[in-house]
Image (cartoon, rainbow, N blue to C red):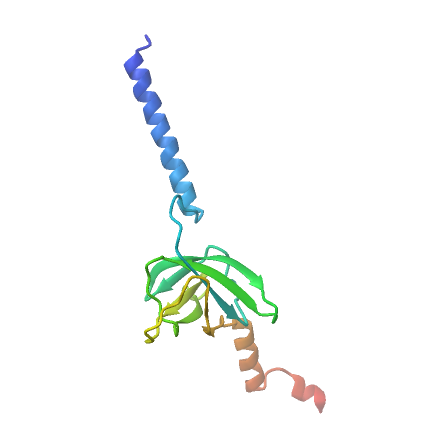
Length: 157
């Protein structure tokens, strides 16, 4: 088989296109973005974040509008979550943030519920109204304790 410059060029372009598509897909699946920044960075403090992780989605009415950027322990020993939402999104100052779970055992995400105030959150703003993650272990523990199935009552007699 003889070498043909046009065929070699076509094969080379095909391979480069495939590598570029593979790189793009791996960045998107990994939660990275290219050239898309400048969103509205906000903070919220929670007493319990459960399994919330960096790059977890931030949604409004089920529509993804941002991602969690960073989670740290605040001075008051509560979890401080920094997240970014789309830059032009008008969020009132009385917006609330809740940690929810996708399905019964799915990944956790932040759900924002916009309020009714006229004043809008500014970059670096703090969401004051938060609802922490539901801990299934605590829920089951309280049900067992309330039902008297803990066994502590028998041991005390």
